[in-house]
Structure formats: C-alpha cells, structure tokens
Amino acid sequence: MANRPIIFLRAIVLRCPYCGSGGTFRHWFGMKARCPSCGLSLATGNRVGANLLNLVAAEVLLMAAIVTVVVRRWPNPPWDTLQIAAPLLMVVTPLVLYPFSKMLFVAIDLAMHPEAAPDANVHGVGS
Image (cartoon, rainbow, N blue to C red):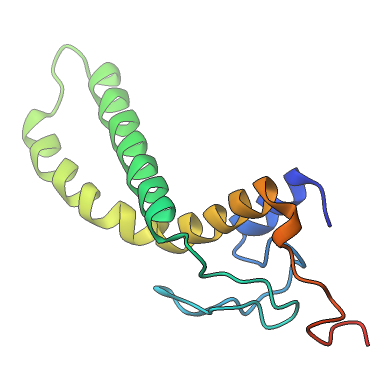
C-alpha cells in the first residue's frame, strides 16, 4: 500500500486512493460501489463523514472569501454584493466539492484502516 500523502493526492485528483486508477465515478454525483481495478469499497459507511467534510470545507471557503473581500475593500466593503454572493456560494460550493469530499473521505478511511484494503489476488488483479 502507498504512503498516506500518495493516498490523499490520488483522492484529490479523483482516483482510487489505493491503486490510483480512474473510473471511480459514474458521473459527478455518482460514485461506483467499488474501484473497477482493485475492488476497494468506495461506498461503505462514508456518507455522513463525506457530507460533513463537504459542508465544513464549503463553510471554511465561504468564510475565507468573505473575510478576504471585507479586509481588502475596507472601509467600504460591498455588503450588497456579499448578501447575494454568499448564499449563492453556499449552494454552489458543496455541489462543486461533492466528488472530492467523497473520495477524500475514502482516503481518510483507508489511511486510518489499512487492513480494510483489498487483497489484489481476491479480485483477480495481478493474476
């Protein structure tokens, strides 16, 4: 198994954290149940954690954007623009981050529980 930085790097580029192969998503909001190459389970018990990770990342990015705009434009921040942009970003950001948070949570689970990694011989890989 690869070391933890490699696992997370693979997840950030939407590849299987275990083997690095692509094809783990059917579409933007649909992750396959298993990696097509190594058989790593991509769907076991990660719904709540991935959604929490997604929400926290969206909130942090939104607050960073608001603080940056207010600080850079002080003493006259564009409050009217922020009143429109902030709610819009709170809807769009989680949608954009969705597959990344799902795959990152799979990587977190794999890094914390490496014994759950698939056995290549069981899934016919490397035969």
